[in-house]
Length: 108
Image 1 (spheres, helix red, strand yellow):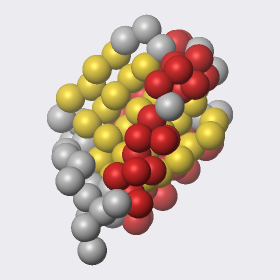
Image 2 (cartoon, one colour):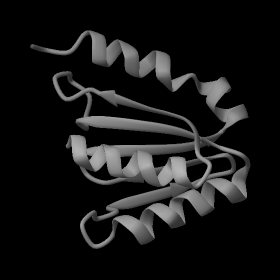
Image 3 (spheres, helix red, strand yellow):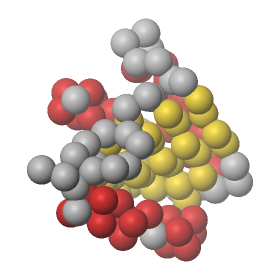
Image 4 (cartoon, helix red, strand yellow):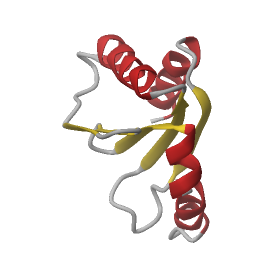
């Protein structure tokens, strides 16, 4: 999984994705193994980041489902979720705090 995450992070970094964070929740009760969060500059930039990911990760990665809303995109790769959010949404929902608890309290 490490190489896959590194590739995703590189694509986001190269395309001006900000504050990219990865949470390994593999040993917890969370429904995926890893969650990646990235801040986009605005809604259009969020969608552009998603397009960059799709074009650079396919065919190796299968996007099982993509949900696009106003300031937040979620891409499901099966065992990895990618959240691309505007700064406003990221501050509002504080997913990092939620995911830190899963990562910290995971089963060993």
